[in-house]
Image: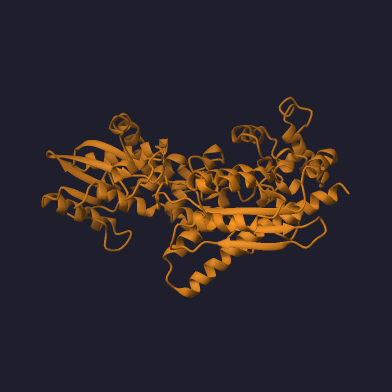
Length: 498
Ligand code: SF4
């Protein structure tokens, strides 16, 4: 007998738990969904090889994936057939029960009993993973395959690669059977409620709320939030979402509605400054503080920025999962405040370990004296420190560079300079367009570090020479803008105290 078409899957079930309206829109008005950003695409495309690699823990299995993506009913039939034929290890097994369809990365028959393994490329188990597992377990058991145990498999971040990969050390395997059994009743109730939602004649009336951001940023915000004024209280940053919603729900919808003398606002210096700057339509500048910051900088100045990749699976000797591997830097050099900046850059060859060539080139390019200005020094320092660990023969040189590092984020983090367009953030992505209008990342193919990471990973496997060149050019342009942005930002700070 042919299976009735499923109504829910793992992802739609979790969507429905987050918000019934989101589930309804997804099923009936998918065209209203927000476009997927390049950053999300870059994040989604990462970690896919982790599932394939985890199959190595249980070699010799049979793949029940559908021949074409999304033909999951084919997968359910394949899985049933494989089980009947006596298969003992199945990858991407699919099951349907109660009109809910789930796939599971690996099932294994051990001593006549079935055990399920779901692989996660993250370093820890989140509450959403437990919900995923609870639904999978509910459906698999309900479909007639009683599970003896249910395991989540995730990355062991304390593993250090020595020679060949040791999969049994690379992954941590945790039983979550107890939690899945505890959740059974809740899962059944919510499946019922979600199915009812799907039969509604019109979109459920769900007001915006904290659920729009948790556990994921909802992809229907373009729809539900489209009438939100640009100066709404939600454009304030550094304040918990719960407090912003209580302001909004109490009728204080715009920043101008906030009473600066109210008790709720008293003591929130950052908030007061954001509101003042917005109301004045002008930056708030602490000149003595900026003068002090500038007086501690020694020209000539180097403006430095790194790009790194964080492979889930350690690629080289001595690497851990998700270790930052630097592969690119951009460096601007200014002899004095009035000189034209010189530019230097490095982008590693993608076929070898980038670390040593990166380090040698960087040490060479920064051998002249002068402070090294970075934006958010914690990151650059941590990369230098990990390079020192990996290449102790260069520790003296690395320490000399570390001693010259100064951090350009400080005047913004410490609110010595606050511009309303920074929208409460001291990220260079907000500071640059606020201080240097017309200078932004918007016209670049790569607009942030996550996309840069994705581009570098793509470059490693790309065979088309034109695409390779395009990716390399995009990476170089992005990193160069990061350091040029620092040059421009410093100029604005210098001018602000003239
Ligand atoms: S934006 Fe918020 S209210 Fe709208 S569907 Fe998403 S979670 Fe629900």
